[in-house]
Length: 293
Picture 1 (cartoon, rainbow, N blue to C red):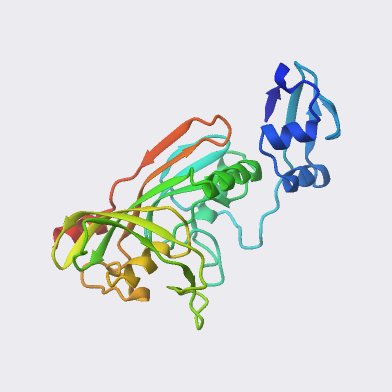
Picture 2: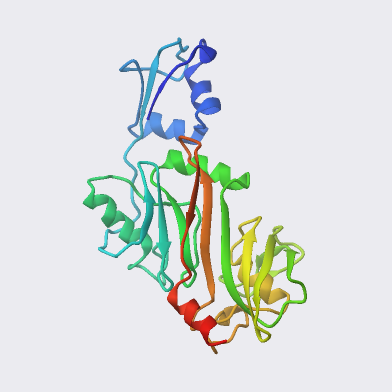
């Protein structure tokens, strides 16, 4: 990463320029300093107390990141929608976990990404920005390095990373559009399940009914917050669980997994600030489920 200092930043300390102008966190600057990265000005290593001059060329070399024990490359097919040096957008199929865990130690999106990176002689690790549940399909955003991840996390908290979903829920909703504003927290007797509870974190979900099918509804959903299982919990909480979502009361009558798909993703690029828009078609199992109704 390189920048040429403009006159308006003349005299700034390098530390302040990197934090205030380029969005580096204290944590990342500390990592660069102590874990093998480099901060160069005009090709010479400098401390963050260096006073910048107009025309200076600042270059940052991030340290190579360590990978966890389960982060092993595997040749898993990936549907890559977009890729550059800073981010990658994937259209995830249902039925595949995003990162390795005790229950899914291999065969995940992360394992496939590592193999993809190695194939292109890259040393990146995996930084998930918008994670999807194992049985949710659609677009997901991944940062290639900790700097872009830091910027994207801040953008996400500011509501600038926008996702839209399509879902099939049970029953006919009473209103053609609406907002569910109900706090979500972990269910007391479960490490996986969430529920609507007064001491939970605020969660806001907007929806619009695309097709009212009497016994079912095909809906468009947009998240204002990003709590774990938010869409699933909210619609179950109002008596309209997602079809196929047995964890939250849905039946397997028309589909064998929760009928939830992230079809739209938009965000400012972490480096260029250009607004990027991506879309993904409804997967065949949800298309087939709708044809049955």
